[in-house]
Image 1 (cartoon, rainbow, N blue to C red):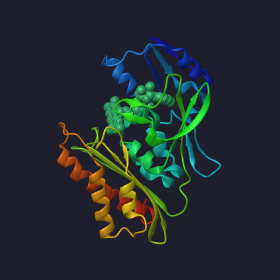
Image 2: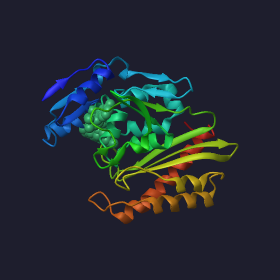
Image 3: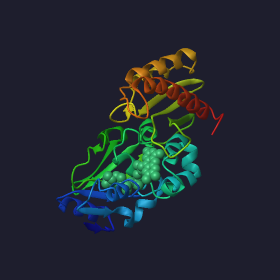
Image 4: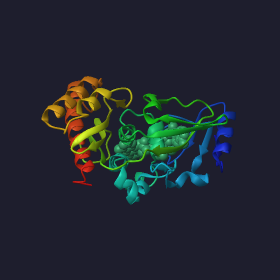
Length: 288
Ligand SMILES: Cc1cc2nc3c(=O)[nH]c(=O)nc-3n(C[C@H](O)[C@H](O)[C@H](O)COP(=O)(O)OP(=O)(O)OC[C@H]3O[C@@H](n4cnc5c(N)ncnc54)[C@H](O)[C@@H]3O)c2cc1C
């Protein structure tokens, strides 16, 4: 195995483009190193991205959003007060990943690129409308977060491509988001179902919304019908019922040892409803 420590994304993409066997990038390593030790994957080239200067940054964009470096850990996100104030749902998703030790390393980009349909930070990123910057020798392009994973363990990234940053849009006034998951114990488990909602208000009415559901399909779903069910409403009981129905209709889960199809379909409606109520209260400034 060749271990590389590039000092720039240009260098990283050049190494990745030259690599011919199994290639893995190292952000926090909390997926890669576990897979390596379990013998699930043996990379020919392991490209450690943490030596690139900008990867630890959390900076305001000119538009008023946030640019998050690819090696920023969950713990670092959780300590960033201004980011937490703008996007509490994104941060709470990431902060549910693993334990205190895992939080010191695990990153948003690693969670996204591992390609798990149950990845806890991904519904929040998708609901937020996050953009992912993909860099290669040919240049950089921004792709919506919902387009990165294509199925369990699979992404759209081609050989020689690396993610160089994640950008969250400006939150703006009167916006709120939230992420909730169900696990059978209090922590350190894989989501049986996850749901994230991001919305903006004009007065008491919802002006825009995005709803993303985790662990109920081969990849995290962005559910336009669930958003449509609440836009233009004050999130009254009728709107909430429509949201629940749309979330359940979109869910196409499997039965496994964590939960049956029927259970997941039931819970996804419950979580979408609760996440919408939290996002709404946050948008109104009633809760953090
Ligand atoms: C004890 C434990 C508990 C866990 N609990 C949870 C949990 O509750 N919820 C949850 O969702 N996950 C959980 N995980 C999984 C893991 O911690 C997360 O998926 C984490 O966010 C991965 O981030 P990382 O930076 O460590 O990724 P890494 O291991 O560094 O990388 C993961 C994947 O992303 C790719 N990658 C990394 N950076 C880039 C890049 N810049 N460009 C392109 N590809 C890249 C790598 O090639 C690799 O395929 C847990 C893991 C452990 C060990």
